[in-house]
Picture 1 (cartoon, rainbow, N blue to C red):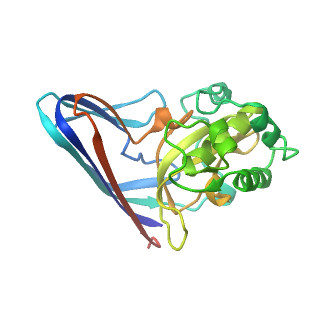
Picture 2 (spheres, rainbow, N blue to C red; picture 1 turned 90 degrees about the vertical axis):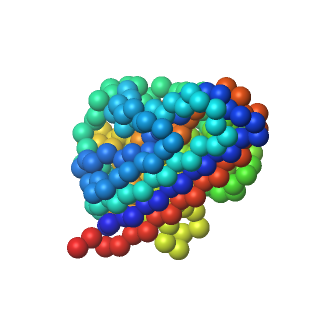
Length: 266
C-alpha cells in the first residue's frame, strides 16, 4: 500500500523560552516491510541526524535563542507490504532478544498484570497473541484523556481505560512477565473507517521459529500494510516521536495534527 503522511506539531509557550532541545524520532527507515519514497522534516533550526541504540533515525534540534513557539512539519510517502499473520521478514535486529524481556518503569508487571498474562494458556502462536489482545481490550477500554504519557501499564489496567500506548504497554508487560521478548513500536496507521488513528502504537512479539509478530493490540489485529513504522524500543519513553527539555516558557500549549491516506500500490 502507498501511504501519504502528514504530521504537524506546534508548541506555544506562555513566556519566552531561552533554550530548548528536542529529540525527534519522526523518520521511518526503509526495511523488509516498507520502503520510504519521500520524507522531509521542516524545523526552526538545524537538525543533526544520527541513529539511537535501537537503530531508529534520531534528529536533534537545538534552539539557543529566545523563542515563543516551535513548529515541526513532517511529510512523506511510504510503500508498505502485506504481512502474513503479522510476521515481519526482518531478522532479530541489532539488540539481543533478552533485552526485550526486561521490564521498564512503564511496563513493570504487578499481580493484576501477571494474572492477565496467564488468562491465555500459551503465547506460543500468533492466534494466542490476538487472544491476549482481546483480553486486554476487555479490561482496558479505549478512552482518551484518562491516562497520560507517563502512565504505567499497571495504572491503565487499574483504571480500566487507556489509549493505544497503554494497550501496547500492557501487552509488553504480559509478554515479559512470561519471559517472551516484546518491543514497543511507534508509527502511523491509515485509519480508513476505524475509530482510532492516525498516529499509533503497537508491539512486536518474538515467537521462536517464527520471528517477530507485529500486533496492534488496540484493534486486536495483526499490523500489516496500513501501518508505517517509525521507531522501536522497550517502551514509549525510548521511542517517543518527540521528546525535549527547555529553559523558560512556563506553561506550553501543544497541538498535533496527523493525517494518513492510503492507496493500493501499482
